[in-house]
Length: 148
Image 1 (tube, rainbow, N blue to C red):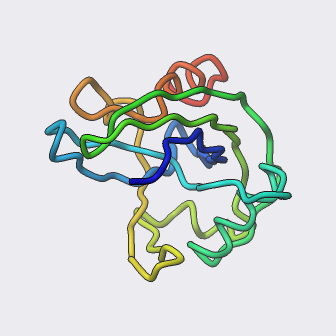
Image 2 (image 1 turned 180 degrees about the horizontal axis):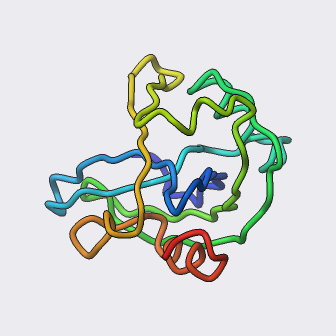
C-alpha cells in the first residue's frame, strides 16, 4: 500500500454566463455524484499555472489565456473509501476558441487513455448529495462573483 501523501493540484473553472465547466462522476462508496473542474496534478518543477495549461492541452486539446488565480484550498476528503489530502490552486481562464462556450459538452481523454466528458453547470446542480469539490470551492466562486 502506498504511503499517504498530500497532493498538489491545479484546477480551472472556465466560468461563462453563470456556469462553470465541470466533470461529473459518481462515488458509489458515498452514494453521491461529485462535480470537479478541469485540471490535475502539478508535476515537480512545474508552476501551477503551467500545470493548468498542460492539463487542458493534453486532456481537451485546447489552448487557454487570461489565466487568473482565484485562491488556494486545502481539501481533506474520502473518495471510494480512501482518505485524500490536497492543496489546490484554483484558477479561472478563457478558452482561445470562443466556439467552446456554445458546446454543451466537451470530450477529453486522460493520459491513461480513459475518456471523459465535461459540461457546463450552474449552482443549482450542486448540493449535499452532489457536491462541487474540492471542499470550499463553491463558496470561493460565489465570493468571486462567478456563481450565484
